[in-house]
Picture (tube, rainbow, N blue to C red):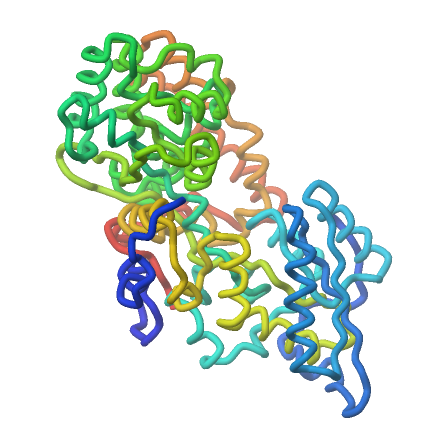
Length: 505
């Protein structure tokens, strides 16, 4: 059940930004040991800053790009100007060293007071289970929550681990999840098409017509490349409107959350579309040996009319050909209409956290309050050019045409869903075992081989599903024998409507 509030609603980001004029169409582009564990009343475990005395804090941040460290230092300088009694020292580590450095600091009882959580939900679970993180529930009130969209701190939000809020969000995770259709509008127009395809049959007809009429000059569609991982982007894009209730089309754990069963067979229709296109030589040749960069080159050079990819690829295409007449639209859906959406279990992921070892938690919370402010989120958006979780932070900021279209596709094609672990987070304690025990070759490898070798994917998927469901049952039994309380029914959500956002306040 969804609680109504005045906060921005999920699925209306483009509308919210359009109202403020932002969508104006401007062109252009571990394991450590600590002494203190999580508490339910964090504010009572540390003294408030003494007036006239400077409190010193350490803030560990991820330096994934050349400008990241400078950005955070600049933001902390702004914070300190308004809080002269608090001194924040920024410690930056590159991606490949970050989590190891964090682990070592906690093992030595020399952790930062604040840190960035890098690694998604698995790392969020790690910092919680290792008792590195101080839960923020006692600090966050309704007024603070009102800064964020509905669902950001809900019971199903991934800012929570075992029910407790462990960090503050910054980036909208839908930006990573969206799988749009990229198209060259000039090629479409040259061969008689005024808009991109909206259904699977329109997609097949358009790609076929362009390839056949172009006679080698251009191809109607291109695959991302040879690896099962990038192959999965096409599956999840074309499959986002398929059978409602199924999540994980892009990976190797495809689960129907209405039944709790492994269900790769539900993706077979889109695999079959790609198989036919490839067998009929409609897809740009050579993709079986490509990396994504080679596909980018083909598209930027006007050799490819359409491909399905990720949001970050728009910038890569522009680097190669800034003037290309590129459109970005929702991937085609089944002819019978949409029956589901691209899944995301959360609109908020924990990024900024407080250390359980901090001796200055009240001061640390002041920094977190700043990191959860409209001012910081806007600065982050202006710097990183990545969609942030607060729509208001992007108001009044000119957005490129490409980003405008990506935002619209996000809103059109993505909805919040349960995750496999939403009912019972003990799943996280053995989910890795399930993944490792899955039949080999993995399902994406099976699908990729079916496309290349022109094999019917449906019976292959059905056979794989039977084996995968046995694996899940076996691993649940092993987990139960090891003291983990979990049952197959915990993976089912029979009352969930896949056509609506799943939010439990």
